[in-house]
Image 1 (tube, helix red, strand yellow):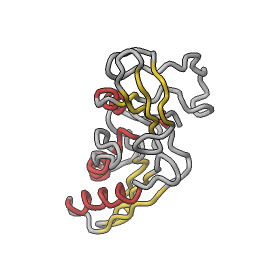
Image 2 (tube, one colour):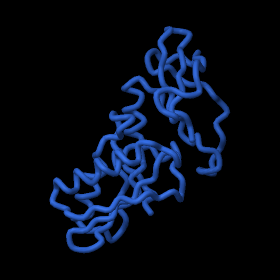
Image 3 (spheres, one colour):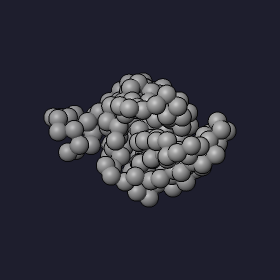
Length: 180
């Protein structure tokens, strides 16, 4: 299991071959179907890629939540990219443990969310996962003007992972990627 994350993609495990690293980079570069501003690596859902034999690759994905409807599209997109790269046998499996957390989003992914007008989840927002201190502030910054004077409009937005908020300073609505 990969635990280190770089700015754009999870680090490859020790002992990974150059081909595995290349294929992992290709699979990790696939855009998320619900948040196309992020790649699957930046979102932190690509958990592993292993050569299973000549022309055979096993890819491990962890959905953002168990019932995530995008997991099928993610799998198909990875299969297509790897098939296009000459891998005839691609198996994409769903791995539920350890569960995905918003802490798995890379720094680059958080930056891209903010740039696209989506308030990124706060770091360490998954209670019990990091073992670190619990943030004392619950303020969310508006991705448009930076104000912390925001209000919740709906617990769910275009996806179950996001909430709809409005900035009372600039009046602009925005999505907030909820901490999980």
